Length: 171
Image 1 (tube, rainbow, N blue to C red):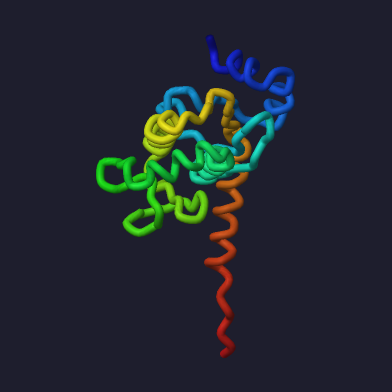
Image 2: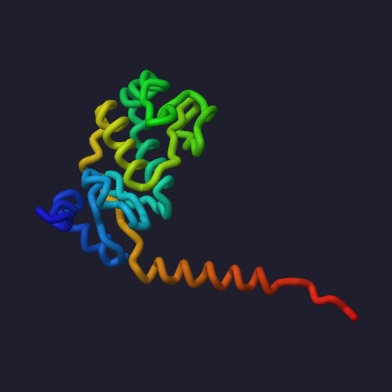
């Protein structure tokens, strides 16, 4: 089954409305390697689109949705200090020792200093599966190629303005 058909099953008739905004749709349940090199525009949780222009924002939105469920929140609290990556703890009660902590809630932090594939793999396989969070109906909408180009052109232009924005010396 292709990803568009899966997205249609998840989003129903609203899939066209999301597609009209531009960018490809991909379910979070897809293999993490499929997200590599892509730039997110939003995450669609429970049919509601949340703007998330970075992978960290996507992950934080999902973690906060998971945390909103009282049972899952308790499971996450119980797992603090027990989920580790290769070099550091992924879920902890403080940001100490984390390279790029995301604050989920008071006393609940997630390590996010990973490439896209590792970040999403850690999220789904090491945390969400363990706490019982159903992420099968979450869809990521990628930026359209035009959105990427506009952002790059704007960034280059801004840098050029900053570089040329020097006070002139009076002689």
